[in-house]
Length: 452
Image: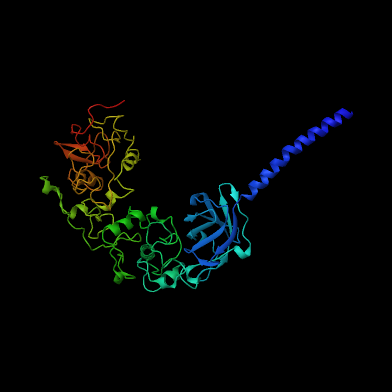
């Protein structure tokens, strides 16, 4: 019995010896977590710069996350722009602004708790003395950036006065408060265009919003051009702005391109492209311009029909969501338009042609803000993406209108108008500007051998 007691005591001592270092290590690990010791300023607006001091932060900015927690329990997460082991610098984003409760005329100033997350380590939630009050721009008492010099005039050049920016909650010191690549003024006027029945600026979603970074991928006015495309078209065409058009009865916009109306400049016909091919002994396109741009057959020019980079291809044809990429053609051949769908080039032949997806080599994607994507000095309209000696104008416009006048007849068992075709070599042939084997299966760049 005595010997057994001795063994039990020895075993307990061994376990205690193991437990003590483990507890010490756990205590040491706990002490390595992030700690917040100072926050400045303690009252600031959405879009403002916030500095957090403390210890045990990561010097790599992306490894830190600042959590804002409203009294309602809702949270928003923000990454710092600059970081060291003792300091984090960040902008209070629109995600934080959306935590502010609404009130008549705006949003209510709210004190928010903070927490720092570094990998799997968490700081404590801040107490009141380290929890800043977040306000909208109109309630800040100064500009969100903290410098009153931005209020006078249009300091950041975004088409909005400092006073108007304070009223809508954007930063007079930043041209793009939410960092989505669209300037504050462009989003503001696009929202007014979309809200034309009421005219005043709608300050929240589902309108273009200078405090909402999700806007660029949305097509608010339904013209086939997402907001990012229309903004880039606006910039590429000279950033035209006519304040006399603001609030007017017309469908057009103060902006040269707006995502709040399809008719940003409905009475301005696109210009005739300045073809460059003749300088190199190449024939100029024979299609008539600007008539070729007219998709819809009416007297008004819509944004999708216009040509921001003046290369002979209408904006929709070169849009990021239009037929300017191989990805679009892959979806086109597999759409409900065809029953059964059209298989890729190497998988199946149709009435002597292989019009389907061609991916044996890459092609340059077209771009509505770049008139010469491959850098050969020819405009993209007169150029030839698939190098089959049929220019882009000839192949691409057949998608939206019968440019060659063949009537888009029934082809290879398909209903009339389903398959885009053109007259080639005396007969109707399918087209695909990203496939060198149509309309000419004997073109100089069509594959001689079909891969398995």
